[in-house]
Image 1: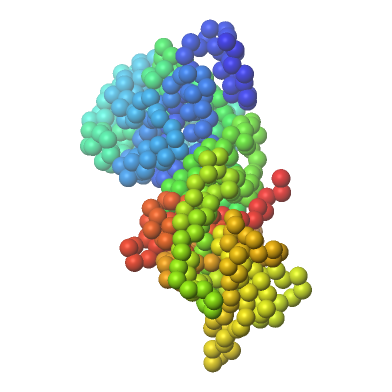
Image 2: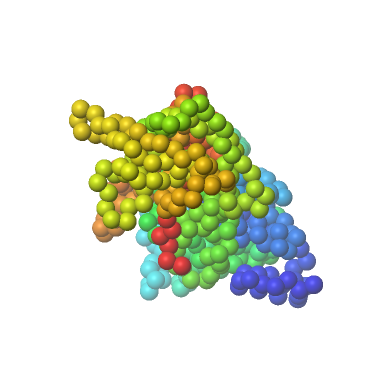
Length: 543
């Protein structure tokens, strides 16, 4: 049965399947373990694992760990956790370092074919000799060493006879190539650094451009999907696969990476934020890392949905960050439990109510199968400070002296009196409730336009709300992103919430009615819960 293609990558796969070039589709997600995954990686994850699912194929998780100086086991574990959280399962867990012996043999093959040589130039000298886009490069004075001498030197490099930076192995291709990547690239360097996977076994390490295509070939990858910046590297990718005489020949396909407005996804910049303690860590809710947006409360399903909707393109573009927020809001609106919370609380005393009762309130009006919770109601309540005014403007439908308002899921109340403290601030509202106005069984005949949230003064939790603005302030042309960081991008508020929220589990998500969507944070203690604002209620994306 023919599978309908939704993008140009799937069109290529369909043609390969139809021609018989490909029998089983095998992709891979190959992060370098030198930092935490960010929202941009989510797109690549969705593409590679999505293809696995659609074509009943396979997708490997392979760590491209060829640079031990920057890599760490911490990053390996975080990447695995992020992928699982997004809902994906890899078929094989692999490391580039698993193939170091085989890569060494491939390099020996190139030397024996006269396709690689040991060069004594420094990194700076090699860089200067590469030429420009309009001028050819200059050949190394060691380019024509004999095969025997190159083999001898390369084995001695492996055995640790030479100091770091004194010798490299380079491919011998074409210093006049219009593609600078083909101008005798370095494929091995001497580097004494302990590797997270191989320890001190090696003192030479392969370069990414050499290792990556060989890893794909060894694993039987059929379609090596990467971002557009690797398009110019495709000729060198194919050259290494061909000249190393790999049996499997993967096809590299490039797609446009994900760029989001007001969001910087440079690992170097994000690491700087962490190292300089500008943020709490890699999982700070303001960070665009996968663990950051998870802690922020973004549902994994919303992230996958976002990647699906923006599609796969060949040209780079930028997506509005409000579009991502809009999709997150859609998912939360569908799934999040509604609870009541009040900020800047004002006390309400019901003069004609005695005792207490349990009220049954719907958890989410959008649920297919309705669920409910019970909320206590008593003589003393708190309402939100924004829901009362001493001198209201016209068409103000909330509470003021002699006005009626409905308490969500409870009764209609009327404000009879306002008590002030010595500073003239509202201290307490004396109200009366309408006994016949109970929600779901209202026989009062009263028509009120205002409905406000409340909490029982005898049964609530005091919590801390962490409210966020974008981490980066207005783009003022500043080249260094660190100078755009908004130091006021997080502010704290105190709120009174229903017990249902205060006693929830970390990562439980709620809509605090008429305030916003929030998630319980790991900083919560038994004494006080902490909630991160996920998104507000208002959708600012222009659909």
